[in-house]
Image 1 (cartoon, helix red, strand yellow):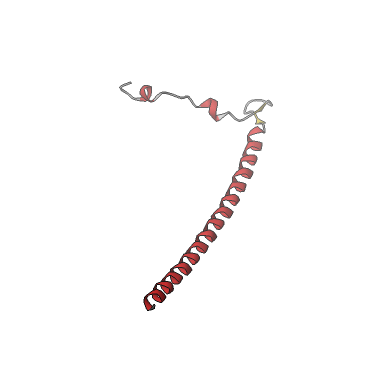
Image 2: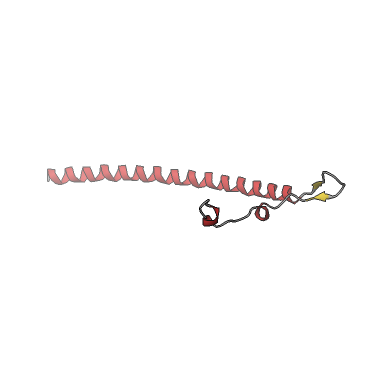
Length: 88
C-alpha cells in the first residue's frame, strides 16, 4: 500500500509540473502571437506609406515636368547565373 501511495504522490507532482509547464508555454505562445500581430500591423502601415510615397511625382532636374520614381523591378536586369560568370 505504501508503494502505491508513493507512486500516486509522484504522479501528482509530475501532473502539477506538467500543468505549470503547459501554462508557461501557452503564455509564451500568446505573447508571441501578440508581438507578431503588432509587427504585421507595423509592416502593413509601412507598406502603405511607401506605396503612397512611390506614387508621388517629383520635379524634373531640367524642366517643369513631373516624374515618377523609377520602378526597381524594371531597372534590374536579370542575368542567368552561367552568363554572369567570367568563364561564361
